[in-house]
Image (tube, rainbow over all chains, first blue to last red; front, top):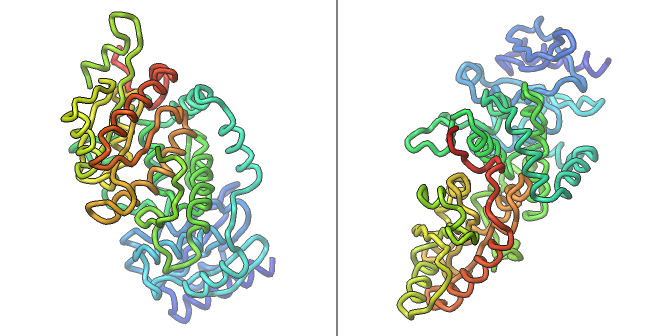
Length: 270
Length: 155
């Protein structure tokens, strides 16, 4: 509880001092946690942080309304901080744009700038792997035969209504025109048929290869309960094996897709 | 492709795989050309799509091929160090490493996903490669119409 008090006080102080024009955090709404946009110091009293906070608030930073309010302060756990570092490495954020109210599992680390957040991540939350349950589920699906896997995913993707809530929830999906909306030519079918759903879900996952921090916001946002984190966790493991490190720790790091090494995996080449 | 998609099984009853090969113009296409001008025979199951470089291959191309009825996809370009654009093949290799595992994880059999280096001098290698993967895909069978990656005809 002192942790939340300290968070509220710091947020209020940032707003009162004018170091941040807005604080983006979480507030209670029933069983859920809704985003809170505090522009005045007294609004910061509604801030909370707990396990129910599943949204990735870095996703708001691409919005022009929010960009106009920069510098903003963002309440960020480890996965969200990694998203911020990634956004900086992809030139979507400048060092002065964002302050971080750094929280962790049962910890509050105070107000940090982006460099401070990167240092904290390396020190306390280095190389964060997916949870054991998630890895076990990836292993279970991976152990199926190709036909079983195809049937499993056919069932999952059939539920997709193409609402793109997964895209809206993701801070890394910041293209102003997404490939799925380009229709000359139409690469990803919008027809009510399986192949468009398959292409969309695969391409969404692949465009996040080496950029996903496994925050879980896409799966939490999915109204149809599609296990998107299975795809993300698979690619996370493949990236970790291919490149040797996970993304979101080094603002100077090269993008995983878009760079290469002569020593890359060559086993599949015939 | 559309015409072929409507004829997955030939009149004789044997399954003839349709393989879409995305090749670069500088090495593998020239290698395929050499196989042709040297009068080598190889399985007629491959449809070649020539691109400037394997680095140009978007994962969407691969999805589109499977969508339209391909039984397998081959990506082939210059050997490491030989790329006309110095590093396009390295980019393609890293992308394929991740992408083909994602496809395999979501139900496209790894026996339908091939990646190779074939230089302009390797006509023999190209012919052997096509014969070899055609046999592999023949074993794997037709790409199942129940797979979500496949486009189904309107009913």
